[in-house]
Length: 133
Image 1 (tube, rainbow, N blue to C red):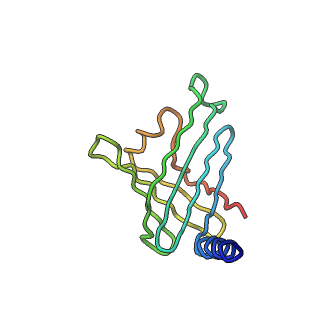
Image 2: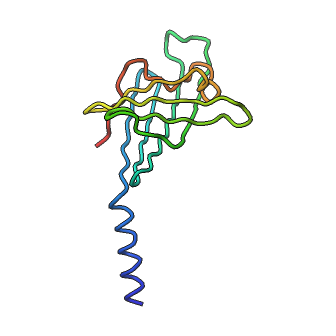
Image 3: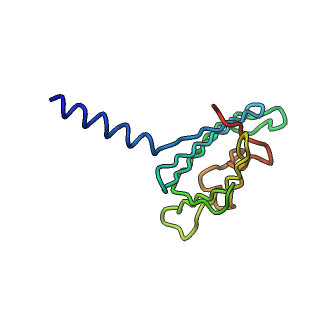
């Protein structure tokens, strides 16, 4: 019994020692954007979600929420690209993540509007999502 407990504990510790997850957040008026980057050995997963309530200049627009996640690749020292194939389509939603020392900036491809419609979007409009420590 003690051997099994030790084995399970060692296994969990070894798996967690190779995994790292970073969270980034941006609140811009009534718009909230969240980004999660998980690295497990050479595998990278990116998840982005937004929750937008209309700001004063968006009168008449509707609130929306959206989420997209998928496998990503490190394409440069400070850049990660996540591509998510749209089911039943020959299109991909592509998110470019530009990492900075304190956060990240996001750019989305045009096809990401499949996941984020209306006032929702994943692009950070040049603003930086702050890394949560």
